[in-house]
Length: 314
Image (tube, rainbow, N blue to C red; front, top):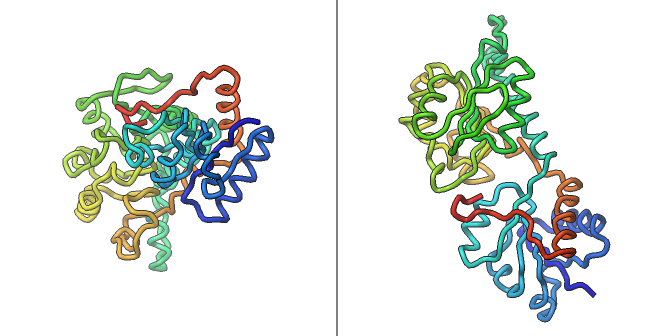
């Protein structure tokens, strides 16, 4: 009999049960047990843990782990909480997640391009005002982050007719868009973008990246979409840029504290659209298939799936 796979989460009981059902259905040959149901000997024998926001103490109680498989694409919290002595971490790389994110990037870029915040405000004031139409070709979109999510988002934006440029930490070449890298490249992209879309992972280098100085480099009247992590943007600096009129609007789906506290000024700010972290939800059915394929490959030949680079943080 194969040793059990530990399922370690801080999800609600209902969410955990839903995930368990999908994982067990996808991997009927495996015995997947919630951490709390593992007997002491089973905890010692477990070689794999599938995790979703796990308690680090629970992971530490599994001494025989060969690797940890996250159900999320973002792993910065996992890396930080588990520390450098944790087993290798495999993040979820799901093409469906990229498709859903690209869909959201396109939808909310259209939201800004078609002046939806202004029409929302006009409705609240019972004012009938028709604004001039801007063709997508008149709008320059700057993408921060050119990994799997950014690359597909760029393609969707180009198909829709937007002018697209991209920035990444290291040089990258993508078809049909101008790419930038490094500090000078970031300055160039920000200065050229009517809408900046942030898809960067949260690392030591990206924390607070969009601060007052960099937001000031964006053109007057530009807008920001943050679908990355809340801490990439300095919240007070963003509010100041919106209050001054330098920036026109911000669509925010991620925040340093989630759910967003009731006292946050973002809720009532007239130039902010608040979303409850819905831009790219994980699809359990496709995620489970990817986890299953990675585990099956390891069972066959002992080869680890691609793991997180702890130096980079993703």
